[in-house]
Length: 104
Image 1 (cartoon, one colour):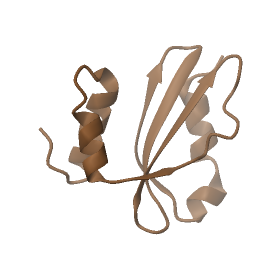
Image 2 (cartoon, rainbow, N blue to C red):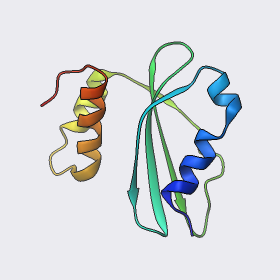
Image 3 (cartoon, one colour):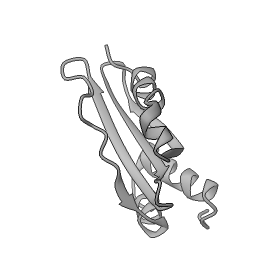
C-alpha cells in the first residue's frame, strides 16, 4: 500500500535536499489508499518558487520523482482558477493566499 504518509516521509526525511536550501512551503495529498499524489510548492535555494508532484501506487512505488519545476504566482493563480478543478484548485488557491498572493 502507498499512502500520503509514505510520500511525505520520503521527501521530508531527505536531509540532503533540505540542507541544500529546499523549503517545502505547502503540500497536499490527493487520492486513495492505493494511489496517492503529493503536490508540493517549494522555495528553491535560488529563492524561486518550484512545484513538485509525486505519485505512488501499490504497484510502482515512488522512485525518481524528485523533479521540481520552476513556477510563479501567475502559474499558481492559473492552476487555482481551473474550472471544476476540485481539490487541486483549492490547494493552489490556499497556497497563493499563504504566499501572499491575492486570491479569493
